[in-house]
Image (cartoon, rainbow, N blue to C red; front, side, top):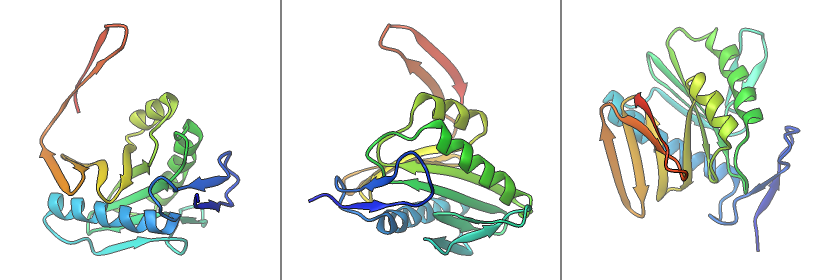
Length: 188
């Protein structure tokens, strides 16, 4: 039996489908918060001052509007804002643009660096990837607590099963296309 929950934000995807990983949206946000918190601790060398997730996790924007943020981690100089999409289809550009608006509004009220991340179970459409790359929004896949790929600053963590592999430093991004062409995007 599939678990499906209605969402009310008017997005074109009007159902959450977490059956493939047997999670509710709240459980998905909790797991994501734990993963992101662990990565933050490894990169910064300290615990985040505040880790929050869920429906009541809200940040005031410069506009005066309180934005609901799925997962947030706050340190002295860094604020991570994470949008979680536990969907049965890939995330489109519309979600990236809405999240970008939220991040921009909130950033006017925070004196440090904001890191914006969108996580999903199914991946991203090419338009979403292009816009996210331009605006420096990190895109990540978190399929479960044991299967994820996520990046924060110079650390990339990958989990397959109970094993987590973390890599530091700069990476060279090369795209190998099925038509045989290669695109070198330089160091990331």
